[in-house]
Length: 458
Image 1 (cartoon, helix red, strand yellow):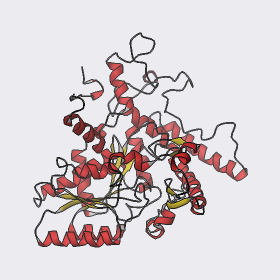
Image 2 (cartoon, helix red, strand yellow; image 1 turned 180 degrees about the vertical axis):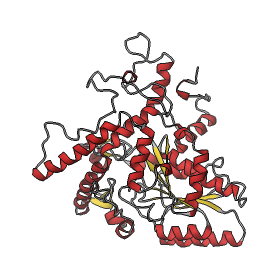
Image 3 (cartoon, one colour; image 1 turned 90 degrees about the vertical axis):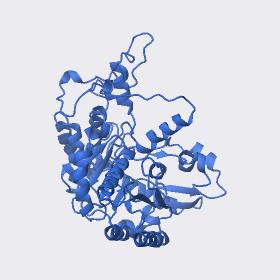
Image 4 (cartoon, helix red, strand yellow; image 1 turned 90 degrees about the horizontal axis):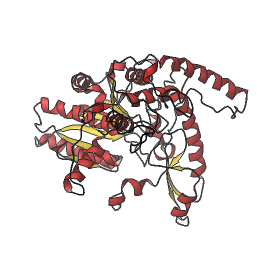
């Protein structure tokens, strides 16, 4: 029975081109199975139970029962963590922000902590009854200033970009201008899966144009390409995807110019704001993006223990209004976001604004320190890579005084030649892992991890 937890399996022969293509599709589109969902399937199949010989042991005591979006969860529906005696391992992880042995440094900090904890506890009480999907949507909507109906959830960050890409291509197909859905543009050097996804002929048959530097010269080349295509009645552009700022080079494309080109040549402007995050940069009320895609796995969740993504559609732009109507018709069941993951992220994001403010502060202090070090040959951080472009869209909404916008929590460095990179990395007393936005510091050798098989390209 492979329909448990709504899971279906397609089996490919190992180490064949079929298996490689299937795996890459899974990776690039982000339409993956989360650990909680997989565990739920194993539990329902009777393959994952505690204290039973020859059975797989459950990895976490996380919520695992199958549920519909509208289900009401009773006290008996929760697993109890044997270590903390708390319901569902990730239900209320962020209510207590500081361990009891850590005290605020002064009276001001203590007052701020008290206010923050009061607000978080108040929100935490609502988690018992609120539909977790709606809770996440309402939290995002309150920050970006849209109705919650403009927020669409997905199973991962890449799945959110895939959802926006499909919507933009449907618009082009229905306009009859490009039966193949139009070609896509990736502007700036993005997270690798975005370009890989747009390069797949089965997903974007009309191809992709890649402007990897995302600078003024690329803007001029993009404009020339758009003019040439229009004059030659060539395949139209359906969507331009860019990151603000980019990962990992922290560059900021000229969104105002891109918006102007999108209006003139009638294509969707989709921005991945995962690195900047929608509390720091205003891409909706400013009217710059038709849609913003965010990996909620990162800073919004904060604990690195759940996956999700979101697409926020801009109700103020013409194409955004079309995408809103389209997504309402074609967006099903939160694109596979599992209820257990939704519960975890809804709970973990209770203190998102507080964490974002703190991370902005500490990251900027670290970046300033690294900027003065001789051991660092290059530092990539919005304050130094693109201050004018970033500050031009800095969010002026402090969300009722709960958030202080800043440059985000990601920075990249290149070490000077006299520093052994391997020794530096091995000796660095930080957690190592390929993610970002956690409540603890993470470091990773990005180029090696993301582009191991294409180092010359990277």
